[in-house]
Length: 135
Image (cartoon, rainbow, N blue to C red; front, side, top):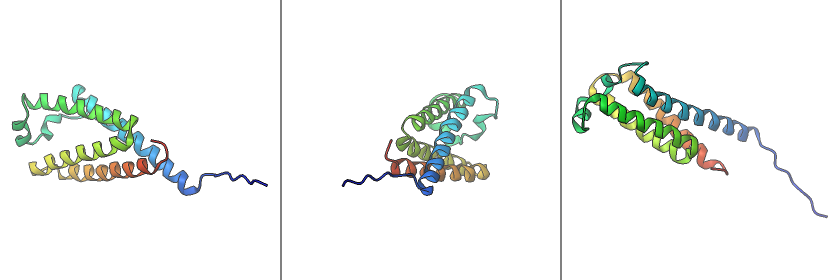
């Protein structure tokens, strides 16, 4: 006589699924929103956060650089939405660059610390994405 076993999700699985969904949502919406605001400039004057040495490296003005940043942020949010296994590390690397930029300015340490917390969250998203059976 054959027996059939059904697998029901455990509390841990449900918690991991919920955490994954929350992180995936945040790391989709936030980069897209911040990226769009680089064009709208409703939240802040983004150029103030660009380190002078970075401004010297990129062609054009600080405003042009921030528009390029906006495009990258929108793209990163879309990658998280479509392929979180790869979007998570992309966002983490992007945040590491932002942190480096802010710390080398010698100011905005509070924002750098906040972004470090977001970086850890992006790495948690990556770990959860790779642990899932579906991509």
